[in-house]
Image 1 (tube, rainbow, N blue to C red):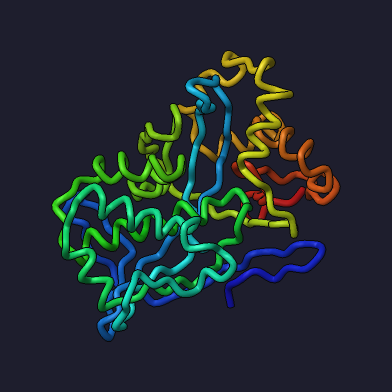
Image 2: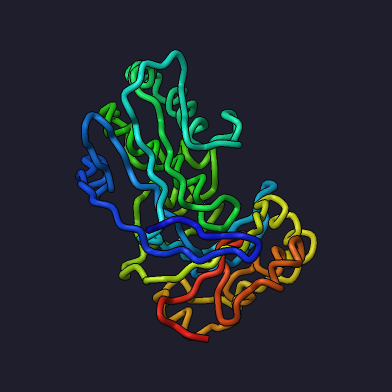
Length: 299
């Protein structure tokens, strides 16, 4: 059984299984994890880990980066469009998240504004969005962005939108920096710039274990802490060529999570308990708070 078994000391994620059907995405010529059953359309919104994450600079008020994103195949939220007569756009399963702050709602508004397609409005008068959450929030796993991106991909399919992946990326990047990776639907990619440059990296996804302490890390706070305390010390020469190395080699060669992820030190400074709860020999994903390691690897 999947899900997060947590508590004060956090918890471990275990593999979840789900029967699936897949549909070929005519726009990107890739297979999307879409299911259609009993008039319900659904799609998996996968988590990601950052094999490495290096800050390369700061421009126009935002950090630039170079990072290897890898999809976590056994951890995902499910976004479903369920038949329902609705007076307004309706989302269920995101308790505690205000509608205006929900990335799915932001994606819905952005798609409407960009396309002006009345089929989208009409579809959601007859369907509600039901989210089954498995990815924890503020954990460095990209759950919110993945949900929003998966929503956009599923809307493109069910409403037959004539919109390219690159157009979706331009829309999604205005909502969140992780959107482009999830919209490209790559299992592994080098991501750079403001998160908008996504280059597929050809490798088999790694099987990883995840550990998420009972701490939520605010991304904006972690980046602000990095800017104030670490930005002046970045050295781009220290990670030359990393984008060409496969992920398993990187993890087996560089054992220090502080070297692999520039945001780890900032996250520990902003949330000191992270360092206390960090398991030895594990790596740090994104802006936190999840740690990961290769499956079956022992410290």
